Image (cartoon, rainbow, N blue to C red; front, side, top):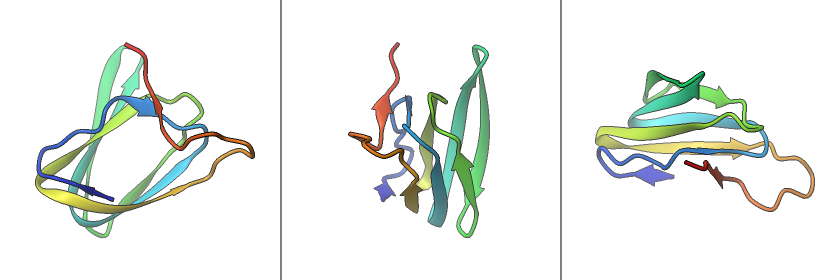
Length: 87
């Protein structure tokens, strides 16, 4: 997956965990926790796990964009990988 420079995903969740590996560039992962945003930046060669199951978050590419791999661990019968968060 590629995100262009400074491009964010929308706020969303997944029906199961997602394992993310940053291949090139950087990404800032933002979590919506108890009405606060908590963020962490990951560089090429690093990665993280999003727990899914309703955990709302988004990610924003760094100044040079980001290339990453995402592996989704979805429950049987899941209709999608990404569920947009409701405002």
